[in-house]
Amino acid sequence: MNTFSIKITSVQAESIKEILKNKGCTFDSVQYAMWRAKSNDFQVIFYNSGKLLIQGKNIDNILIELNIKSKEPKCETSDLMKDCEIYIGTDESGKGDFFGPLVIAGVQVNSEIKKFFEQLGIKDSKKLDDKKIKQLASQIKNKSVYSVIVINPLKYNELYSKFNNLNKLLAWGHARAIENILEKSPCENALADKFGDETLIKNALMTKGKNINLKQTVRAEADIAVAAASILARAEFVNRIEEMEEKFMLPFSKGVSSKVVEQAKNFVREYSFNCLREVAKMHFKTVNEVKK
Image (cartoon, rainbow, N blue to C red):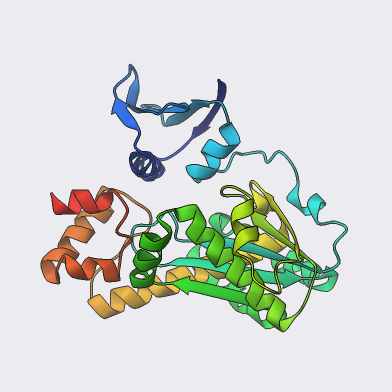
């Protein structure tokens, strides 16, 4: 068993707990901890101090599934693409959020665009606030060839029922983003954040993408093209949440938490349980909390 630990907030802990529930983990109590989750392959403990401890056989895969970024990446992903003059980076936003769409974006870069992005201060969207993300997204679009795939909740729920697997749905979105960019500007290389079996994206690619050299690695946001894609995806996700709030005249918080559960209950009271599929991802365990 390998071990990994990180300090997190209670809000982050709630989001991780929800993912673990969706994975079918069992929960119990342990001394000095808020909760412990166990499966056949790993266990996760959230201590009163705010420390999250993960023990398992394959820590990297567990971190990917729980959407946790370790403080120090094992490699500089930019080194993977150092020999590529032109390549595409892809990333997504919204997969861990109960409310709102899933958004996948792709950005094509060359040496000139990479320098421009470096001057702008492009980095992983998780390190930026929403206001900065929106500003940077506009500049990224003005400078590069890009694609943004928005899967609104209604379509998301339909596709999830078809795929019955989030990673397959993600792969479909990443493949569409790559294909869309190749339609506008051909290139031979792409880099994506690794979220599951590497064959998933490759199998989802169509005519133009079948011959692309696709690399996938954990914490790919260290690469500037993937970071730019993460900003476009997050900016669009934030915009769509704001549109939902304006349409339904109710707040929709990001992530998964007790606050999100209460907002979902309020939405059902105001509209209906059937309408919830218009604003939320219905395979989340949060739905069961709302039904109660």
